[in-house]
Image 1 (cartoon, rainbow, N blue to C red):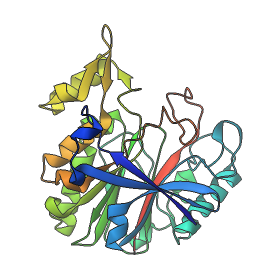
Image 2 (cartoon, helix red, strand yellow; image 1 turned 60 degrees about the vertical axis):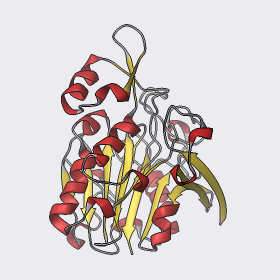
Image 3 (cartoon, helix red, strand yellow; image 1 turned 120 degrees about the vertical axis):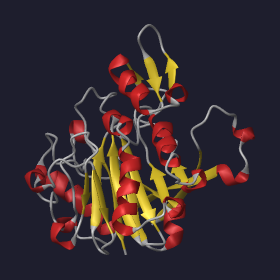
Length: 295
């Protein structure tokens, strides 16, 4: 297995020269069986989890879904999708037939996952957990997964209570604060202290590419006191939204430490060689996955 380290700066308007050493966070790009995926160094150091943010590189899908499409809800061949899931799951030491997935509806719904849920959504989209965009568990050996192609993937680890979670945050999930609600759910169910929690915010569409209109700005204003920090004007009735920062601020609001929130700094829309992008590819595209398992 080869290892390529990427030193990625937190999303900000400052020059790299403005950063102190402790503000630099590391995502690492790994390659195994031709599959490329990112991991977070801070998560890896705990030795508590296996995890990944996948790219589109290294699978068997073709055409619009080339190569590593992992979403069963798109029009790719099912046998190719299942082979792709097998490839990445095997790298993580998991059986792809036992992974857990939800039917994502851009909501703020959270599911507490037990061993009885193993395999839901693994081989057939119809068996996925109904209407949920976040999963949490404190059970070892359960591979939680979510799927995206511009939406923000969020991985959560409580190294003290030994619990994990993930959230799929599109703009609707972001403005309804699904990341924050997932951490609060872990606090309620597992007695997690937000100050102990590590969060990874993976590759997603960046402010550079994410143009929105008043349909997004109105609920943003309703839910974020500091909403003005999250947007830049981009012409009449148009704005550019910083989804990564929106998710970071809502986590800090409940006591997650800023130094424990690791941003990838990668835009899925810009980086066409690495990522699928719903917006760039006009809807006809594959899906990456975020994945995490407690050891």
